[in-house]
Length: 331
Image (cartoon, rainbow, N blue to C red):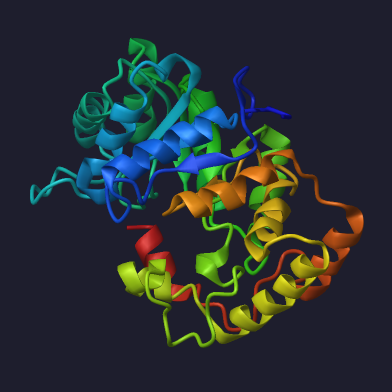
């Protein structure tokens, strides 16, 4: 397997990252642990979770699964979303970060977090407050590296400038939503990542299932789908034109002897600046479908055919970005 460098660090990670959003619910604990072990046995050494996934259950299950294997895993988690009814137990403030990291370390049953990420940006907290808190955690050895998630390119660049000015730990990763149906990060974030050696760790590589062929209509969420379970923000990322484009990509996958999800994941994995897309399997079958992509490479002919479906830098016509998504992203 071709392990990849995590941004400007000396750490090497697998070209797929196992996302733990489903672990501890809806995926039961015992199956979650079996899936984590299967991924590690297949060569995946990169695992991503967050303190808000299933109210902390995901971190707890991950910590239990990694007992005896922690040293061989690059473990990432995230902070930002509310942890209780306390108005200060949320966000990107120094106060919240210093409390949240201790809770995550306890649930994960570890002394350190390899990659600690700010789950969403905020406009009403200066980034220097957030970065100073993260820098302290790095100096204390509780965190090895830091990153961001779903930050616009200008805020990533601002964070890099602040870190350079004050000699603080700097972001080495960014987790953007990225898939064949939404290529807008190619306009600003990808060039920035290439210039400053930021590792991109895309989430939603299957476009909420639109690239898997699960949807017939945008207003009819399949049973068991993420949209059916989560609603609102996930539903805003499903569109009729996206479903139709996904069906075109699925036909191309069939011609190449791949499942639609394998081709969609392979496409993201082999895009410029991408280190490891985050897979979020709910079942062992989902995981087993994704694992062969570890050893695959996207050929030029397939890349050109997919570019014809959704051109570089664009998104499907009726993709729901828009104000509601941006409002959530920056709050």
